[in-house]
Length: 94
Image (cartoon, rainbow, N blue to C red; front, side, top):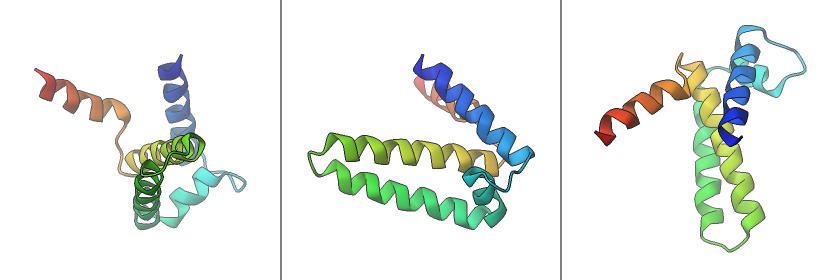
């Protein structure tokens, strides 16, 4: 179930990249360019680290979700997918 949702999310992000919408936050990120997308990933990573040091489960999980979302957007902006990353992990696992 979780993997199905991530796959659906990745497809939606791909669609927003290929078919921009004026009302889409994802499309607006792509429109701002790779530097802005990469910056958002950095910001979300820092926020996740900060929340990891505390004991607020809700804040931690929300920041983890933000990081995952922005990471998928960055992959798409660079022309990659989670499958590309998974292949690397599979090779390392051997």
